[in-house]
Image 1 (cartoon, one colour):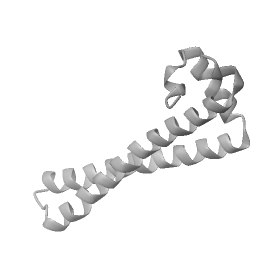
Image 2: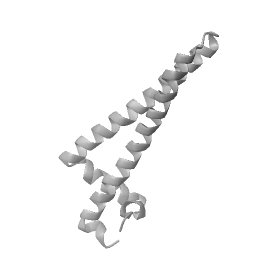
Image 3: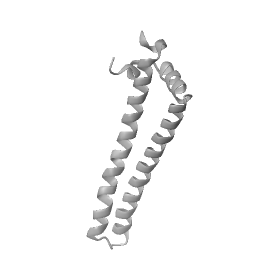
Length: 103
C-alpha cells in the first residue's frame, strides 16, 4: 500500500486532507509546506527578474548568471520537494486511518 492517497477518490482525498489539517501536526505541516512553496516561487521570480533586467538594460554580467542560475535551480528544488513531502505525509496519514484502509 505504498500509494494509498493517490488511489483515493476525489471526495476521499478532500476528506483525508481536511482530517489531517485539523490535527496539530497537520496545521504545522501546512504552514511549513506553504512557506516552502512561497520561498520557491519568490526565488524563481527573483531569478527571472535578475536575468530579465540585465537583458533589457543591456548590462548583464557574468555574476548575474552566477547568482540567478543557482537561485533558479534551488527554487525548483524547493517547489518539487514541497509537493513530494505533501504527497508523502498525506499518504502516511491515509494508511493510518481505519476508514481508508480497506479501500
